[in-house]
Image 1 (cartoon, one colour):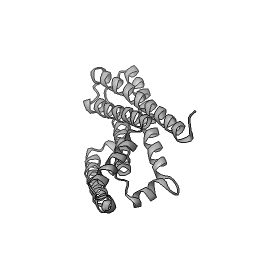
Image 2 (cartoon, helix red, strand yellow; image 1 turned 120 degrees about the vertical axis):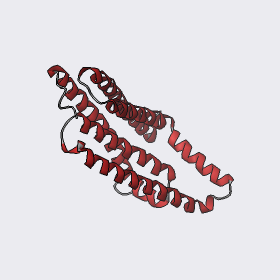
Image 3 (cartoon, rainbow, N blue to C red; image 1 turned 30 degrees about the horizontal axis):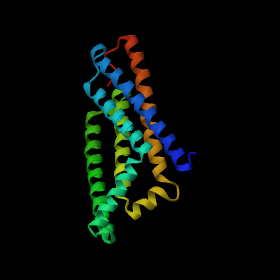
Image 4 (cartoon, rainbow, N blue to C red; image 1 turned 90 degrees about the vertical axis):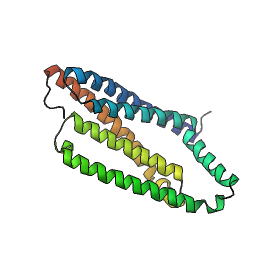
Length: 197
């Protein structure tokens, strides 16, 4: 008999799987669109990465891989007799992750502003938004792995920011994948090569 957490984990795995399948279908469509309407190659690459990420999330949630990795890290700290001072290491790791994430976001934001992709509607903007949602998901996973007490308090207590960020990123990729696919079909029917970016 399934208990609450196992059932919730199964639903989460299915949700990840749906997002992964939609992203994979979109990757195939984007790859076809390279030949038919001249889509940039990076569209298919972003959707392939999104698909791989959410398939991996589905497997991880279903088999408890993320929790097993967290337990393994905790065990290594205990074996190394540094478990009691783990917060020092966790603080450093969390700080490094946050600094790198801030740097990547800043550099990415500058690149997006310069490219002008976010100022106009089209398949490129949809793809960029999906990439940003995947980035948010990866950052969330890294923060969960660090498992610093202060971060855990933000992620798991009160409004459950972990759930909102996790579900939000997954739903965003699924909706954006569907939107991209529908928009691409409409463009292909018109034979348009001018408004994809």
